[in-house]
Image (cartoon, rainbow, N blue to C red; front, side, top):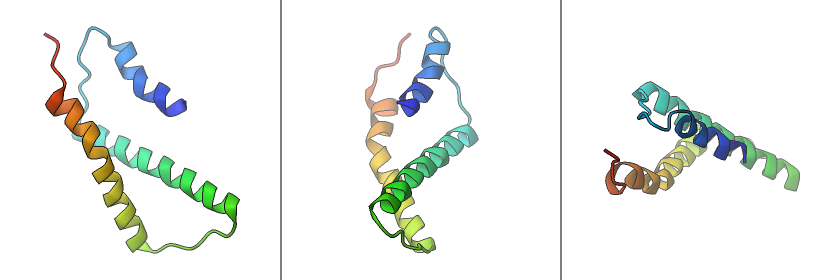
Length: 85
């Protein structure tokens, strides 16, 4: 619910104007959402039982998977959706 509100806020605030984000802002947003998903996963794992220590390989694979699963949203946003003029 909170994530949906955060994602909808720039569009609601700037209804008539295009939202321009820099590459750094988009990268920071991607890392923030990766962190939120990681925290939620760690909370589920801790709630179910023992939490396991992870190494850098785990985080490299999960970040790559996060990027792959985000690709359909990129295609919709930049390649398929018609621009308003």
